Structure formats: structure tokens, C-alpha cells
Figure 1 (spheres, helix red, strand yellow):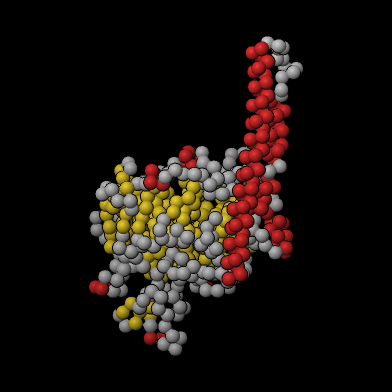
Figure 2: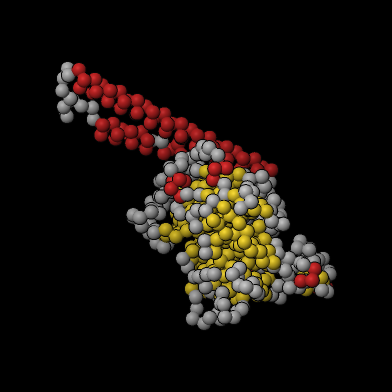
Amino acid sequence: MEYQDISLDQPDPVPSFHLCIDGITRHMQAYESSLFALEAENRVLRERVTYLTQQLESAKQQLIHGSQGVTLKNRPSLVTDAQGTLTNLSNLKAAYSNIVSAPVDDQAKARSSSNDTTTQLRVSPGKRLPSKQLTHLRTLQMHSRAVSAVTWVQDFFITASRDASCRVWYVPREQTDSSRPGPLMTYRTASPLTSARCISNRYLMLSNTSSEVIVHSISAPAIASLGVYANVESMNSTLIRTETDEKSLKFRSPVWSIVELDGHAVCVGAGFAALIEFNGEKCALTKTIRLLDPFYPKADEPMLCSFVTRVGGTIIATIRERYIKADDLQPPSFVPEPTDIMNYRRSGMRLVKINPEAPSNNSTVITFTTQNMQCIQVTGLAPLFNTHVIVSTTTPDAKLLSYRVDDQSPGAIKVMSTSECNESDVFTAISACDGYVVVAVNAAVNAHPRMYIFQAHVPQNKDAPIEIKRVDTAVLDSVYGSVTAIGTRRVEDGIVVILCGCDGDIHVKCYGI
């Protein structure tokens, strides 16, 4: 199956009819299971509260009437009652088990059981996970389309989906943690979301295909107090308006990525980078940088920026490679006929360095080409060690590329060695955290993808590419099709990995290091 970059405005990888029905069924089962579990827990708690209230009222009446003293010997044991409550609540864990993994065939169940029943995990201060171990924490199923971006607000992660919803999730603290299995908060827009970014743990920015950027104020303590499917009274109360009192920032074309820079935000789209500044409960567009393609600047041909990240004070974006005939850039989706391909040349896979604070020459383009006649298709971009960026592509002889961000010289894009991978592997998503690189390997819509975890090392030779060593491989038995987005976060016991499937399911894992 050919990989489709959802960071560009293309259709999602759509599974077959039967897999769609199966996905809808799994979503409904997960929703019903969580409701049943919450109802059962609520019923038990109400019964215990009623019983304890009656006991307290009885003891109160005895004290008032003075019929007999309430001594330690005949007073109802609240400790025993509390222990009984905990015993009853522990029996409810089975009610949550249905939403941890999706119903699959018997063989897949056996594989999932063998892989997921590992040593208990702590992702908060406490007992550490044994090193070099990948543990499955939870499967979440509430998005109906592919997830386009993952961001974090302290200990919670946020997913933005092509179904026009953005959901806030709780990261379980250990493998047996069954609390808050569903979304804590849901933001909705009128169009599919292309990106999401939490700025300074205070502002949540959402961009959609309608060329809007919507900003909400967000608070980690407020999120921590929410339960599953929290009833938020009004999203308008958290909306950050513009200086002209508009509900959203509007652009000429969609914003594909948002990055944080010194407490502000940089929104990048096709042909522009915009600096957004915040002033309390207001936001404003303070600067716009035009990004024109150097192959055809007279026609105001925009750079088609897709993936964007930040290294230090420099913004790095990937530019979609295109075919060129004579001096004319061809449309982004154009692919020449095999018999006519010799009449075309390629623009090369390019990175653009953007410095919004520079008074002039805000952008620098770095180009990389291969002997392959097919255009390089970028599938991900991740910062590493605060000095490099790593690019994942679909090109067999350039699966991973590294670039050293150096303000003194433009440098060069280097091909990284992937000898530990299969030649047929196609990387569909990438994320880096604390010296570790996580990549997802493509799979057909009815097959399970794989995940590689590499440990990265910067060689002494500054001109050499990043060196990586594979430390773990996992077959994602509960995932079908491609992984469209990965989020990683360092915790005391390891690295939390958020894997998002093309059908909207989310898988939370942790790798102990």
C-alpha cells in the first residue's frame, strides 16, 4: 500500500468496508464498556455512601439520646467498611478490561496477551521498570479518522484528528491503572484538524483545513480534576480571541504545523510562516514571512512546507519535492509517465531554516538529492539532542536523513545507516526523545505495523550523520494499517510512546531505559 502523507491535504488511508465496520464496532464496544464500568462503579460507591451515612446517623442518634455510650467496642468500623469498599472497587477492574485492547481474532488475542502481560510499570516516581522493556499500557478508541498531531500539556497528551475533534487524555501510571479510560475533554471544530500545539502549558492552538487557527486557554490542574467524558459547560469560556475580537486567526491557506518559540507560536503553511504572540487573554499575528520557492520566485510559487520542528531558536521545515520540466515547477501531485520521466528533473528534498526574529534573510534552503528518479516523500521530522533534526522518508536508499543545525554554515543533509532494518521497510512516522528515536513501519490496511526503537549517538566528526543502534522491535498486534503520528515523552521510568493508527485508535506504551 502506498503511504499517503496526511500532513498534506490528501484523503486518509481508508480501510476496506469490512474493516470500517469492524472499527466502528470496536469503537461502540469500547464506549459501552466504559459506560457500564462507570455505572457499576457509581452504583457501588452510592451503596457504600448510603451505608456509611446510615451508620453515622445511627451513631449520631445514640449520642443525642444518650441511651448508651458509643465506645470503640461497639462503634461501626469505618476502616472495615473502607476495606470492603476497596475490595468491591477492585472487582470492577474486569469491567475496564474490554477497552484496553480491541477485539481481534484468536491468534491476535494470544499474541497480544503474551506481549502485554509484562512487569508492572510506573511512569511516576516509584518503582522503576526493568531496562530495555516495552510495555503496553492502554488502547484508546474515540477518534473516527486518522490522528494528524500529538502534543502534551504536562502529564496529559492531546490528539488532533481529521475527524475535526481534539481530545485530551490521561496517561496511565502503570499497567494495571484502569482510571480515566476515556477522553477528559473534547474540542471540536468545523473542519479536519491539521495540527495541534500546547504553548507554555497555557495555550492550546488548533489548525484546520479551513485555514483557521483556534486558540484555547488550557490548565493542567483543571484537566487533572476532570473525569472521563467531563461535561464542560462552554468552550467559549476558554476561547482566546484576537485583538479584533475574532474567534480565530485566519490565513490564506491551511496551517500544517505549529511550533513554540520563546513562549510564542510560529504557524507554518504553504508559502508562509507566521509569528503569533500572546498578551494575556488575547492573541495577535505580529509577523508574516513569505516563503517562495527559489525555483520559480517570479510567479510567487510557495514553498510547500509540511513537517515543522524547532531546534534551539531555529525553525526547520520540510519542503515537498516536485518535478521540474524546463524551468516550470509541476503541480505537487504530478507524476510523469515512466516513458517520459527522463524529460523531467527533480527539485530535491529540501529543508528550510526559518528565523522569525532576523531583520532580513529569514530563510535558508538546504537541498538533498538522490539518483532515484522518484521524488522523495517525507513522512516525519523530529529534533534530536538540540543540535540535529532527523527526517524519515519513503525512499529505500534514504530512509532516514540527519541534518546538523549550525548557524555558522548551511551544512549538508546526510543519509543515516539503516542496515539493521529490512530493505522493504517504509517509515510512516517518527519521534525522538532523550536520545532515542521511535519510528513506525508501514503496513497494509489488514496487517499489523511494526515499531523500531533506536538509540542515537552523535559522532565526533561533525560532518558525519547521526549514528543509530536498534534496541527494540515490536509488532503492534492491536493496530491495523499505518501509524500516522507518534508522540514521545520522557518520564522517570522510561519513555512514554503514543502511537496513532490510521483508523483513529491510540496506543499508549512505555519503554524502560
